Image 1 (tube, rainbow, N blue to C red):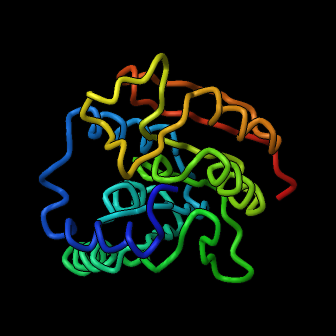
Image 2 (cartoon, rainbow, N blue to C red; image 1 turned 180 degrees about the vertical axis):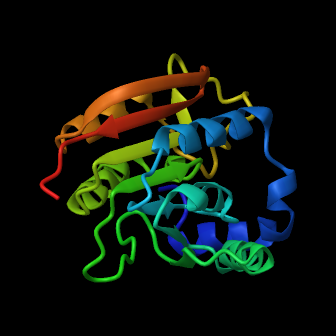
Image 3 (cartoon, rainbow, N blue to C red; image 1 turned 60 degrees about the horizontal axis):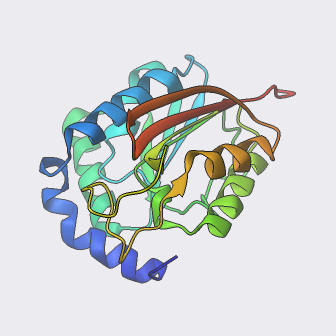
Length: 205
């Protein structure tokens, strides 16, 4: 990871108030695909990692029993909570958490894990640690939308900043998921540097 967690948190604290108005069409497409593929059932608990201002979490709330949004930025979480209050949504909660320590309440069974445009801040080794932590929660489905390289990366493209971001190839992400006994069930290519991976596995629950 090219910057520490506090440094990343501070960056997003600064962006929080204007964040929703700065998203690219590719980001929006990716977010829509994450929501579509998450497809929670009425009794499902969804964990949204790197929840930001809560767009994915709130989009999934009508179809899920409960949605937990986790982020490292207090500023982003504040924006997300304001949305919940304004919309009077009762089954969504936001709190501090990160990929390797998602801060899920003890005894909570997580059925679906989502994340959009967040994991690319981690280096490849830390991404594997993050996927291991997700796998330990035993969800049946993981939906990851992010900056990911389908071909040779071009640092001149607008989807990541080489000084702070560390995107992986699709292969690295897929291997991390299959190595924890998930099966890749869908790959959506939005741009040669943006996509969505869907991974599923059978659970005993």
